[in-house]
Length: 309
Image (cartoon, rainbow, N blue to C red):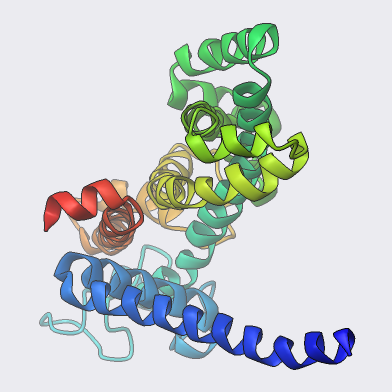
């Protein structure tokens, strides 16, 4: 009889959970619709993501196809332009529109996986440091402060010069060197949450340490870490372009916005469009990520949401 009652309650519980999820998603979409900057950020990010995923179908030409007879051709709306190459061609006659579209793959790949690695390492280190406290916290934070004291860009350039040009190397470099930021934010949130009333109540009734970590502390870290991830992803896109500009990112055969900027700087006076389009792509992608991150911060932090009201 007891098993039958439990079975009868399961569909009701699942239905209530599904309704709650739909309500939260609907509320999130309504808040996004009311925020123009958040909508703009999401739109820019979605456009870049679609370009990265569907680049073989969206690109009118191959990103490596060379036609020296039409090198440095201006955009289509110029006097000598051609609509077969809407954004013009570079110094080797490669279609700039196709290369910009394919370049989004490198930037988003570095940003996404770099943040994923940095967030994973930082979450574990920050949890241990914040929850253990004492000497463990002192040792970990001492090492993190030393790393954060180093000039970040010079540190990254130094490591990239040693490891060589490779997409995997760039992802690992950003993932490892950016993890102290996630660790520091995680530690700060853990220190705040562990002093809260519900954590103290859980300890008083004998709840295990692991259950407190996974059931009470980690769910409250999702909001701050997601917000931080959007801003750090934007920063990684900038840094990857900077490494590409210096010749330390992916090989020259791989179309990336940084490599395109590096090639276009030689022709800023004679063919400025070669560097203009990848520069605009970097700017709008980073703008979209920052606007989206700013909206997420306001939505996920109840204090900021009340202040805006």
